Length: 222
Image (cartoon, rainbow, N blue to C red; front, side, top):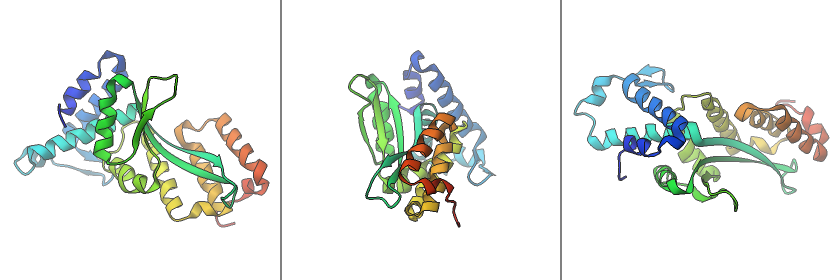
């Protein structure tokens, strides 16, 4: 992978001081506290410091901690809604994971893409020099992105979005979004992500109501 994750953190520089702080905290917690949020079980330090773990394993875990910290600062888990007449309710939900970075530091996005083994990198816009690493394929989200962040949970409140995002994507894999009640439930979950926001909720619900007024009153099991 070239340089170590710790060196990569330092090379991000003062422009991204807030992100660097987040990464440093993540690395410190990963290596000094060793607590798994998914199992609520402490991991013994001596196991990781012994010969039972190879240098490659150590480096891989450091890399995963680095990626989790970077995504905590610069990543986003979101679900947008788009009009689609071929869908039963007239709209579709589009889950997306993306991470942004300045074009002169594209190697960070390449590193994340290589580790997750999916997605693509593109320019943010014609007028924005930033690059964005994007994963929209539902199979990749289910098989690679979501499991990675369940093994390497974020430390900020953004972890709540990760968990909601995972619930939505897995529900869609079960085709729950194809019913009025299921779509309504998942739409409400999607609106709650990234801090919610009254204007966002009103805009989405008004949009759907134009096509299907009764949908707003639908609830799972009704």
